[in-house]
Image (cartoon, rainbow, N blue to C red; front, side, top):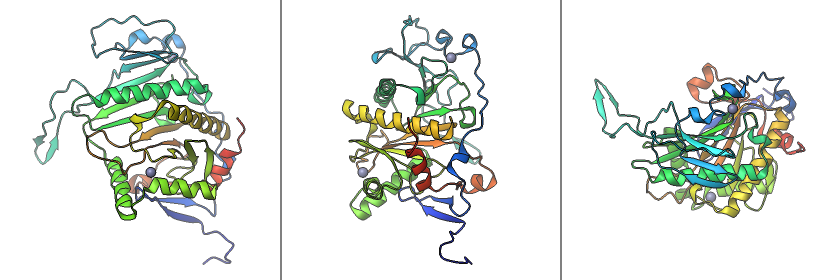
Length: 352
Ligand SMILES: [Zn+2]
Ligand SMILES: [Zn+2]
């Protein structure tokens, strides 16, 4: 029993409106925001001469070369020699060690005893930015815009590949967040199957839409704009918010204000605004938590040819501040040790 009403309960179970997930937010014994700051993280950077991405010739032939936004595309051909210009700023190459392979023909499901399996057909690409150590939080606005141009361009191209139903775009920063090579890079994976997490978020969004005749994300946008307590940044087109049911401490979402289901249809003007939202979010996060490891990823409607007009695309930035142990692994519920409202207040006040 609580002694008085003012005393906060040790934690809250919060319900995520769209995915239907529950998260645990420690409220009573929550940590102070600046206690999440990284303590002199040891960043292992190998010298440039040994870096796979600085020595871009060691990679498979590029699919796309960007020189400050001037893009050139090349068809998949592993034998072809492509002369790489010295002034490249972003290069996309096929992943040398792909989990999904473009050359595993056929999608026929086979049986092995009780179990079913098929070849992991798909396309896996790596988006490499030029500078060996320059992280997204150090990018200029136009460099982020260029990266978004490349994401969109590859997305549109990969949609044309056969059997592709879902395209995942993500970026890992720091060893703790799964970046095995420290040179900044993002990944794009195009797959024939839609993973259960996306499926849940899709069916949650559809159920909400069918039931309320409104989009849940549009409704959350509205409420976050009004209350302002979880709002980190806003421009004409986008909101940066620490979601009510954040899965991790300091999680942020970047959501278009307009109801937009398909990321690949983003206009140039919207991309400029999205670049600004990323710019502010990444810089403030970097400053507030002193270069934390993180993942960011896109959540958008599948490209399976069906109608997903009920969906509302967005990006999630998820800093890695805790380690998943038994409880998290067995339930999928992470115990977040800061209230999203406090996280938003702290991130917002960082000067950049
Ligand atoms: Zn490098
Ligand atoms: Zn919407």
